[in-house]
Image (cartoon, rainbow, N blue to C red; front, top):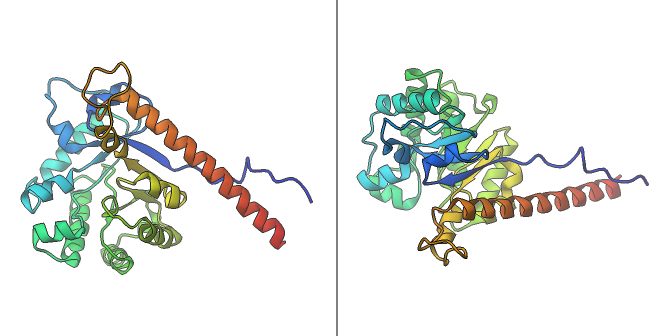
Length: 277
């Protein structure tokens, strides 16, 4: 029996965007970042950023819906802001639309149903694409149960959007869930349909369980963890929730763990294939 070569058969790593509340990190690092429109919009216009890294834009939808129970930012205003970011900052991979999350707490806040949130999510993507066809807005699947996400795929298809043909499809309403196993099942099914998924706000446990099915993901988990810990030795701040060295060290640990887990899984799969043969 010949040797097993993992160099050409290992699963490619998903692009991992480090979430940050600090837009100026775009000028300081060369790793992918995930930045919120709400943070960028607060910056003085006289101080323009120039990214040295690739990055993706969060619309800030959860906060806006939580605060107001609806979107108060007009789509034209949001599209104009994204156009400015793409032109002046550069390096923008994709931008989230103004979607409507489907967590139970969000449905309670808006007073709408899952189906209504899905319809508004799809309608906003279509409108943004019409307003600014040259900008990299991605469609987002919203729902709670697998059947919801499958229905959302049908909504896009009815509007003439073939999700499997697109470079990225966002998967919403997963970051605040407790059941990682349920999400893993949903992700596996959707990826099996040929969708190149982006996981919003994926926890480290989620990356371990279903990261292999994602084309990309972002996470701010490092910041939440840092708030509950003392700062790194020699750091003057109260905690490291907005600390670049802490964030980079966390990212390296997560990616190293994922690489080791993926390598091990690839080896098991190849051994199983060899035994089956």
